[in-house]
Length: 416
Image (cartoon, helix red, strand yellow):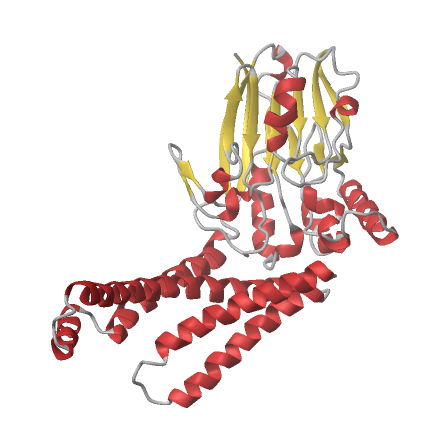
């Protein structure tokens, strides 16, 4: 609780300082209803701080939390862009005054003032033309990302070439989705549309690589029936992600409520007919040939709680010529899988969401998340081992996507 209080106070102080700086710039404008504007400005400033308070201290329904988060996000991002231009103007003016003081001390005051007026754009003109325009760009982009990006599902086709692939598995079609985050959804028909896109591809089996919910099992209440439709002849195999354990709401320590919530999430996988792999594996057999599907619990670096136990997950798979690993966090690949488990042919992950922001084409991809994760979207190879990172089916926090659209991946297995 002390950390929550400290975080709230720091966030509130930062927001107030931002608003003070913005208001000090805007109040110099000449416009009608100045008093009314002042009242509205500080009223909305107080509302944003109230939003932060509710997000930090109250147990809100996910839809309400999403609305509050969006209000904070849109407001803060726009203000930051506005401030950048105000700051540039203030630095320019400060530099001009410093120049006059250093090199024109003998010039009379009226000449100095004349020089400033002659070389400077007025503060009002600069702010209205540059600052407001700059603030509107992220506002428009974030709004568009919510309207058109959140549910703009993309089917990506990926051939996966594997050494020692048995002939019986050549051409096997695997679908992967990840990071559903059902508590963030607000448009059920769109979610249904994405599921229908996956089913139209008629995969032989399906992988789900974690984060079914944001925090709570009951977030799946309105969506369990939809995702239950995902079936495949060889099965639907799933794992847990970092959000499924309830650590972000209940804390890292065990409690009865946390344990019950996790048990309900595991039960939901079963209710949907998904085979949840908890540090274990399944052997697929076709024409007396074998392929191992290995599922490990969440294992990540950088502060994420590690529940995964690879030694248990790979038990009794030595005789399988191909081993496919489901592990939510892609950092697991480089940190443990490559150095300790060279027998893993390919790993399937999610987790990054591609930060829900960036650029992704067939030939180029970029997102700020790449400065946190070396592998964050698409296919990666090192020697004979491969990793595919799916950027997610759902979204978290910001209820939209800009450039990094929700993904359904269809793999075709092929022999090298």
